Image (tube, rainbow, N blue to C red):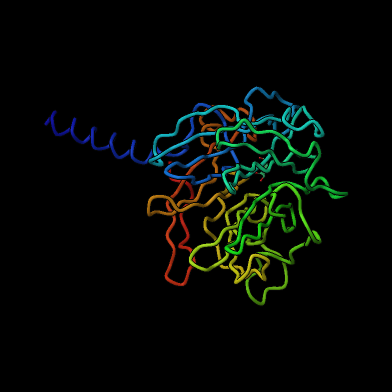
Length: 316
Ligand code: FUB
């Protein structure tokens, strides 16, 4: 009887540990996951919520960007800080290292970063580990509406045209030149991403922030954090990188206990994954401070028509 109790406990422990994958990083607070698949490795760039902000320090305290790598989506190696506010001489230095994305082109790695309140900049490196340097010495985008110039996402289409998307509460894009550090043409405001067909008023599906643009099997996808708060992850599809975008549904519905979300989506070794974040570590640590977040992953399934099967809130 004692043996069967022990085996029951062991089975429980094993199933708990199998479920205890999220959050995938438990030694630092991380958010805004931007995974990059390069050769056989997933390079996961994250923002970094510092945990020493006391009351009155504001919601976010974010000064640098971190890198983790994995070759099995289970074990993540901490590669440390890859860039910080100090990487940009033109931006504020005290706080505001918000969402980012790294993309590879012709052997160079381009890390697009939000310096919140200052604009979006780009850093370049010869390796995904860095060192990342600012080739421009000035912001790449960010005009009068500087407070909404956040959350860059970059996508390179099959014809070689690259697009930079960003924005809160509207989605914007511009065509990047082949050098990836300059652009041509107008900056375009994308009309109404995330309305269901025929719908005339915004609702919880609606685009809020955190775009993640990609192409898969001929379909263009725009995933994003849906209307704040709490935020879920919504997505729209199109026949082109410039839209029009048709709202398709939730990838993940919002959860009342959390406020934010921010998608990053990849295919890796025959499976698809959505990254985002939850607040579990923060809750476990007695709610240290509101914006102390932790990156999570769930497997994603596509239907034959390219639509995505909704996944439940991050398993813990
Ligand atoms: O992490 C700071 C900001 O919170 C991001 O830029 C937004 O997408 C939201 O996740």
